[in-house]
Image (cartoon, rainbow, N blue to C red; front, side, top):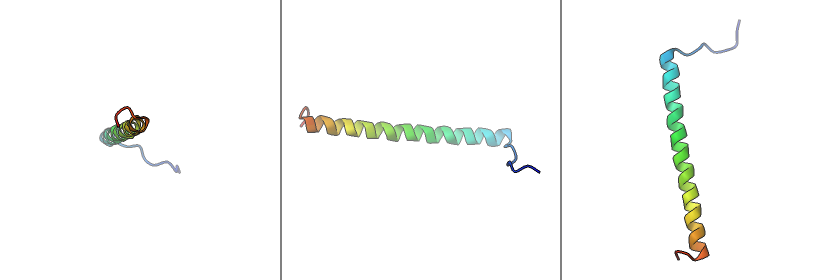
Length: 50
């Protein structure tokens, strides 16, 4: 008797991969937005655009 869950079917594995890719893209967008926000705040505080 195994404690492992059953292997997903090909369609389930493809759906899981698609959802993971979508989450990864969303995370990249959020991280890039935060980095750009910090960069913009730094420029303003240093007086280059303020």
